[in-house]
Image (cartoon, helix red, strand yellow):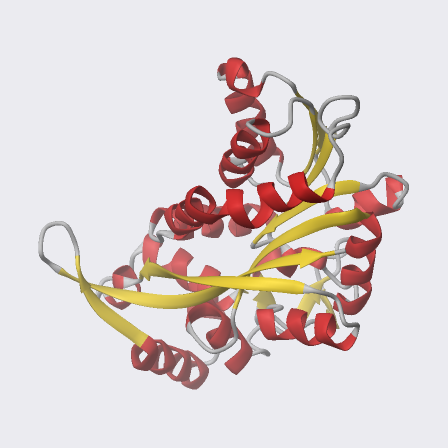
Length: 310
């Protein structure tokens, strides 16, 4: 029996951190923010809103699934150059990550002059249930966090996000595509983990797919409701060499859990399923040189960056 990785929060966090250590995701998203965020988000917000925003009232920003804040901070620094007052609401379910974010803000407090933070160590669903949609935001940032809308219907979640936006506001959403890398893998094998654990008994209960939301899902709903958006893309590379070493490695096992979104993937799935998944990864990986001119096996994922307007 296989369980979704999300059944074990500690393992999920371990897999997330291991993925970041072996991926250039942070670098690629950061490069896009440095290169294009000003023209595609900051300038648009500045043009659409009166001079009062950021002067007589703050620019309101909502970060959903902000993790340790690396990408939020890059965005806030650029927004700060245009808006003198910013209210930044951070929603992050991992206590460890939100503490890292807070520590960065504390240590570099001079960089955040004029920015008031509100911290919510909870899921997006809990945040909405507690606060509703009374507060409106000029910018909502979702960098690889739309996957965590949970059991909420995606169409309903996107409607909620639109309701949270001020007129003229922007949702910045970074999301995997379905035709490469991790997005293609989990959508090719959506039932690797088909049971969700009962929190009271720790026994398997309801059926739950490990399929991830992808950009095609999001864009089809936006198109259906004629919601305007523009898009960019980038490619991220994940070093998966450890997954194919002859010896059993902790790094390789944790990476496989993260790539397949399956808890203890290597020991919990049937042998023929394991072989099919590994063959799929082999067929879709590339070989690249590292800084020592040695070959490394990489899993390449194309990601869409959507700027959704209201």
